[in-house]
Length: 370
Image (tube, rainbow, N blue to C red; front, side, top):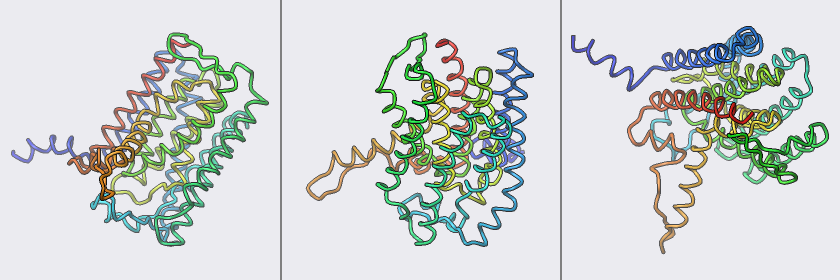
């Protein structure tokens, strides 16, 4: 009787990886079908969002069963930082570079599903370019058996170069109105030339923010799946091709979480996380949904902010001995929560629910802008 009484509380405080996979799948279905009913577009949403999401999830999930053992045989094991949470030391040796098996696959599915629409080709190239930066970084880390891959400066230069190339393409192919940022309340911010600086910054910042969020089993993959679906719902009826791309990326993330749920058998590495951030930013900018992009990226934004705040506070409080104070127990935020007594799966579950709420908020708030 005692066990029966306390087991529900334990499951809520410490859900299993399987429970979180079911939660994520349920949230994605509820968001898709809920908004399909809300807009009265059940058939359209099923074709543009639900079908591509399902196909991508199944294919990427199945491919993972072949690629993960292959990565293990390659000895592509993750190098765990010694100054990170001690509970993560047991993860050493888990294969990384998991982004290599689901990102290219879902990009191909999206290209085929959108009949190679120019907008999807463009965001696909941005996605793959950021993935290659991440792959080179991951490969260098594995080759050198340390946490030092590409230098931060080189990684940033490459990210900026891709952002510039994408902005140049948009400048030549998109209408002049793309430089107008639409905010809630139908308020339009005409940025003109300044828009291109903002667009470049968003691309680089989003890819790095997603990268920072990738630190707990299932966290980056699941929150990205919800963020992509939020954007996909917004553009499904106005830009179907980009809706299909978003649905495919969301499904690919779900297929990856099948292998990355706690306890993870593979990590996405920079190969996956940089690609996801770049893809999200590219869709948000190209579709004219910068505000919605900011809202669905709320988790990534807070995670980045926690790192910036931690570093800034440490530098500002440095004493004569050169040692400063810490604002958080550890940054990013998910590590602070871990060291505060939260278990990994509890963090992931709550972040999933928050991001589902942010996806709903992004869609509803954007409706007031159009």
